[in-house]
Length: 226
Image (cartoon, rainbow, N blue to C red; front, side, top):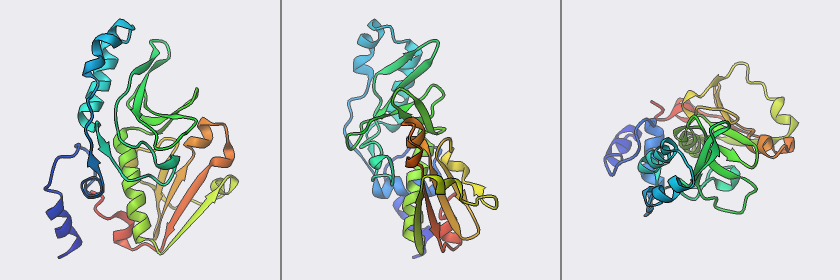
């Protein structure tokens, strides 16, 4: 059985959010699961009493309906990312914009995972840093990291100033991850993941990290990326 045939066979099980590449769909179906999550509607009246706008509660509820309860394997950074995706109480103001929690951390971290005013997925610790333009972008990045790790002949990690020394002029951005502070780049035989979010959020430039996945063939570079 070919890789494509195998993916077609396993992806008919269950439902996953729309808009993901086939690679991310495969990753969510095979390696993720959905846990019981009571949602946010039970909090609506209390949140309204605290002055949270209806539109922001609706936005959190919509996120919960699509992503609530989805638990993925750990991401390579941010101590694995959220243990599961789940909306939490919106925070903010009309002047600054509104955020709501995207899911609880797996370990103790100095920042929280949040969904931003424009639907971005990012980290917040007094400073808001969007990692990806959407939660789908975050899922795509975790799926791509898993795929690249499995396919690469060598994996190299650099940190701090060495990240800025990477030569990416001949690389193209991987658009499906909707990169903001965190980006992915595709070259002739390698993928490069650049993580700047934690460094920007914590004002800690030494935390900049990049992972280079080398020795990739055509399948390793894209997989089921469409």
